[in-house]
Image 1 (cartoon, protein in one colour):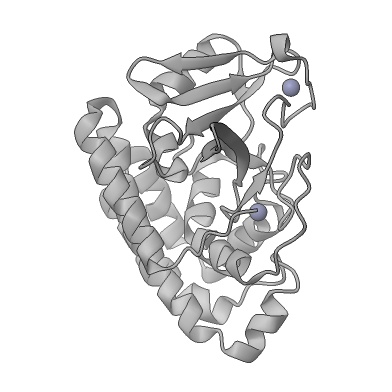
Image 2 (cartoon, rainbow, N blue to C red):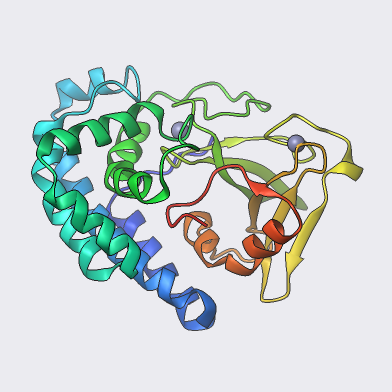
Length: 276
Ligand SMILES: [Zn+2]
Ligand SMILES: [Zn+2]
């Protein structure tokens, strides 16, 4: 498993990558520009989360990634988060943030706690906007805790994150020797774990002929890794082709691929932060 310390510099790198991709790919610019505001907020929140967690409590946090949220730290930032979304999001999502801002804090708490418990595992039924708000707000907290966890032994065929039990968001092919080694990136805590190259992370299909890979001209380093048995796909970011890619961010630009996959009858296992 690779460790990604999602500290300040990590968020800065995501923001810079979003800027690069946005200037190159007009079709994704609106999404990526909005994402930059999210990432900037997340960076500030992560600093707060880290500052409030003293060395003693870190031991307890590391016990279980999804142990209860410390809402005394998080909740005071939720209104500021909703304002950020209201100000910069596309209209429908901005409106949903506004509606949320009118609700009493009890509703905020139940929405955040529900996502914390089920996010990445059983969230297919939750409305996209409701999920977005809790997910974007809690992501820095999940990443912070994941970075504190002792590294689990590598289990190459586990289909869910060994740290938090969530489904993978995407695949990443990282250079290794003459080729690439495949990792899956967690949709909840953003950690990666190693995974076999020819294996469907949804249903376990391992026949190469049933696992087609598609690449779009505009984004040659991103692939649709599909499965003809279960009809699910995950995007795969190929860092052997673009070593500057940051999978979490590059995936947000992969709109043409996602559209293509949907048109061909494949569903995405786990949507990204922006719901594509
Ligand atoms: Zn995870
Ligand atoms: Zn499958």
